[in-house]
Structures are given as C-alpha cells and as structure tokens.
Length: 473
Image (cartoon, rainbow, N blue to C red):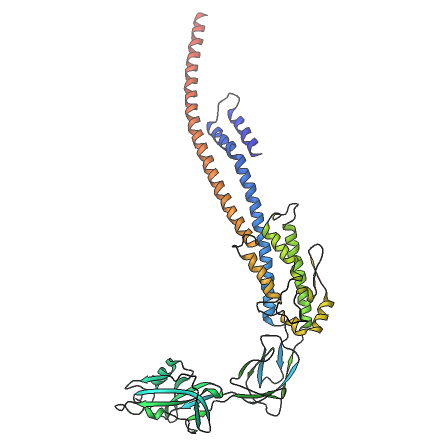
C-alpha cells in the first residue's frame, strides 16, 4: 500500500535518536497525506482508459463494417447489372431499381442538337455591326419554325465595334441553352451556335440592327433550309426495345424500363443487340456469409465488454443499446417500401439470431427468396435510404455521434470528459501535495535549527559539569 510505505519512510526518517532528515520527513508526510486519494484517482483513470479503448474498438468495428458494405454496394456485384452485346450501339447501367431478364435493342437514329453557323468574315476581330440578337426556341420541320411559347427568348446586346468573339461571349453569358464559339474555317471566321439535343430544342436567330452600325443582320437565320448555315438539325433519338418503338429527347435515357438506363452511341437498324442482366445470387450468398462472420466478431467483442463479471462496459447504457439493436437486426424491417412477396428483413435473406446473441446464416432460405423475388433481393443491396448498407450505416453513425447520451458515441464522450476531469483532479492534488511538502520542509527546518541550538547549549553545559566534576576529584 502507498500509505504504509509512506509511514515506514517517516519512521525511518525519525531514526533512533541519531538525528532527523527533515526534508525526507516533510516529503514522506505529504505523500502519506495524499496517497489514498491519488491511488483512487489512478485506479479510476485506469478503468476509464480501458472503457475508452473498449468503446473505441466497438465503434471502429461497426464503422469498418458499414464502410466495407458500402464499398461492396458501390462495386455493384451484389445487385443485378446489365450488359450489352454490341457496345458500339449503347452503354447500359442499372437504373434506380434493380432490373432482370433480357431485352433487344435496335437504334435507328441518335438524338442530335442543332448546329448553326454564320457567314464567314475576314477574321474573329472583324467588326460585325451593332444591335441585338434574339434566340427563339421551338421545333423546326420542312423550313417551318414553331416557337415554344413556354420558353423565354433571350436577347443579347451587341455594342458598336463588336466582333464575332464578342458576340459569342454575349450569347454564352445569357446561359440560354445555346453555346457559341468562333471557328476559323477555310473561308474565314464563323460564329458557331450549338443547342441541346432533341427536336424540341431547335432555334432561330433574329437580328435587330443599329442603323448607324449595320451588318448584324448577316447573322440572322429564320429556319429557311440552308445547308451552308444549318450544319445539323435538332432531332430526337429513335429506337426499339423488344420491338416497341420509342423516342427520346436525349441520347442519355434514364430508366427506359425499370432498372435499365441507356447511353446511346450508335445505330444498328435491322440488327438488334441483346441486353442481359446478371444473376448476383452467388455474390449475395458469399456476402451474407461474410456479413454473418463479421457480425459474430462484433458480438463477441460486445459480449465481453458488457459481461457483468469484469466487463469494462458492464454498466454502460450505450453498449447495452448497441447490443439490443444488433439483437433485433435479423428481424428489423430494412425495406419498408418492399412490395408484397419481396424481402423486407435480413432474416428473409437467411440471417438468424442464436440464443446466445450470435448469428448464423441459412443459405437455403436465401436461395428460396432469390428464386421467388430476385429483384427484391438485389434491391436490398443498393445505396439508397433503405437496405442493408443504410441499416448498418445508421448503426455506425449512432456509434460515432456524441450528442446522444444513450448511444455508444455518447458513452465515449462521457468517458473522455471523465478522463479530463480525473487528470485535472490529479494535477490539483499533486500541486496541493507539493505545497504541503514545501510548508512542512520550512517548518521542520526551523525546528531543526532550534534543536541544533539546544543541543549546542546542552553540550556546553555538559562540558562545564564534566569540568567541575573533574576539579572536585
């Protein structure tokens, strides 16, 4: 014991009447005064350090589990992914939901944007006149332009002395859905205007000249067919999916059918290509086995931490709340919007809870559910607000959040604050102990001086007495 050691040192310092080490006596007395309280603080600090370490380990295990699931979900091997036989026609990707089966795609026309060029001028720095340019949007067919009354017709001002470069900058600044640049062609500089894809994005260009600075009217175009001016027309994409004729305003087509998005890049009239969705069954089964193993590792750590017989978090509310959340994991509804017959819980994918809180995986149940609802199974492995990843991610976020006192994150914050308090308390006690030692040293030094003086006087008197006694002899 610290107190017993300090007491023994005091006895040793007092000696057997041979003199006193006042500095050692002061030090030992001050240590004895504070030994008990310092020992209590050290013991509490050791416990808090273990609690912080254990809680941090649990938090990191959950966070790493969520991160690994998120990585698997992002790679896409846990959900049904589309592939296309002829990649020159289109690239394919999974849509908002999971798709399945196969489709035949025939692209007869790609969506295009209108490209309009101006008559050539000597150079990009040649003055083009002054006034205003107005863009009108709508549809154009056979030289007949039909304006879209719902779309604004932006007007840009062209100042006197402006060049094609100035006109391009003014049009781009209008941010009206048309981009402009100056091309230095074989015949000179030309203003190039490009609209957005789709037949509804055709446009004409009107010009209003400043009479004092003519020339701007040369840029105008009213839709009259002119291959020298209209290099490309605005058009929709046209294709057939399983023989059904479809059109699209853009070559990027999101969710053309449930679970399938297209990026058209070529045509294949008369030679349909096949799109197929993969079967992720084996990947999902392997994932569920890995998930079960990871959960059991986590539950083993958690079980040891909250063990009433020596667990560092035996009385921790946050650790117990985590245990409760994971105990219900297999039966928790993680797909609340699932259609009838589709899986809603991890239990329906084969995850089960044992009596001791550990997990086991039933591959037969997963196989049965995959056959009954393949799209429902793969839908659980997406990056949406519901599903396997979202569920584990919420548990990880809760374990990392310090604002909820009933969570593991709240417990970590509490232990961290307690560690700081104990450190400050120990520092204050150490300062008080040092102050007491200094005070005792000063007092004992003065007493030692007085004792020394008394001893000198006693020695003198003893000498006199000895002398008197010797004389009498």
